Image 1 (cartoon, rainbow, N blue to C red):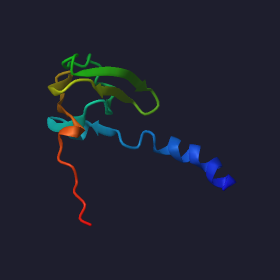
Image 2: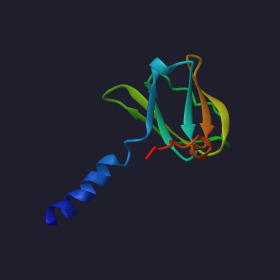
Image 3: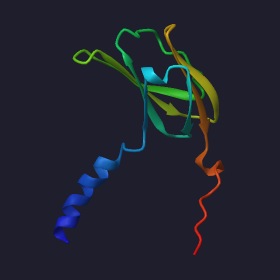
Length: 112
């Protein structure tokens, strides 16, 4: 039992970010769905230096990091309100995001 309590915090820490979505250059011009309140990342080449354009009331931009070693830029967004917007970075990248509520989806029914 002692080992269970020792390993539980490490297991929870490992699972904490497991549900967030990650998008990149291959998702250019794609439409995606994000649940309200969730965080997702967009990873692009570091040459995509333009300021990201999006509807600020719908998404919030958290981190905007450039990794000099891998030459990658990572933008972290949180879905803040219901609706749709396009994330545009420079002239070459666009991602259409629809923010939905998980409670609006039909529940999975279990047959007993």
